[in-house]
Length: 369
Image (cartoon, rainbow, N blue to C red):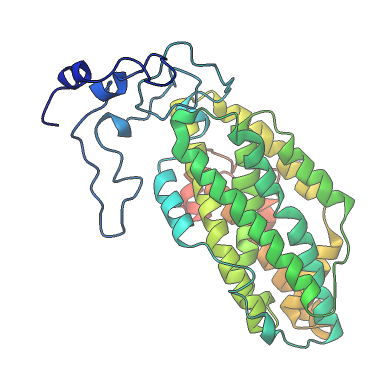
């Protein structure tokens, strides 16, 4: 600017020449903006980290207002209250959320174009049925991980916009996961098979959690964590390259969601230690539901895929399924430890059957570094 804001405004009209309404030139004064502070792009372009300059990068521990005004803007008096209930940073934040957002938008994929649907392999009837049963359940459960963030996002203060933006990518990811599993069930002549009452009961527990942090623990630490370990076994449960590709792509998305949830819980516990007991109580309920409301259709379908067919399901399939279940439990408990939750002594899962000593230090028992 070659002239100050006040000098410029003295030269400008005070009223609209047509309507004669008063004109507002106060924005030309720079308001409270840090005029001259520049965000500079890095090698990847202009990222969220790059624009966290000056005071614009200061995320308050407690939001002073409940508006949708961009953090750092000068907010006019009388702006309506949006009624947000998640107004503390610890309610929604994780220290990796901006990096996860950038990764999410950079790694979006298409369930229409990026899966080789034209190469779908003709499978024996037992394997096709097993794939379709697994895809039926996954098409069912993946959407809860879209519904849950959508339920809470509009209640999150706009000062924590990076967290809201990341969760918006999760909603899109999970919609795509539901799409890809539904497509696979219908792409090879099998179709959608059994949806079980027990699964719906488990999903309802997540959706009806009393707080967002409890819901995040149930979804990201427990449910999505178990699904992530299932996707990591994609090489073993996939009867053809198409399914392997499908599980690799969904796995990379799921890993982001679990990473956010783990560090969100850690941030919440570090900044509000009283919340730890609330999270434990939610996980008590979640673990109990998983143990009591099993899904025999899913278990037998996975055992068939792990065995490569029904002929070896007893000798090979079920032992491999037991190993997968054990991995899911130990990975979950390790995530809890990373999130700042000492869960090993309290868990309802039968860890003794996995050879884990509840009384041993968690780092040694679970391999947490």
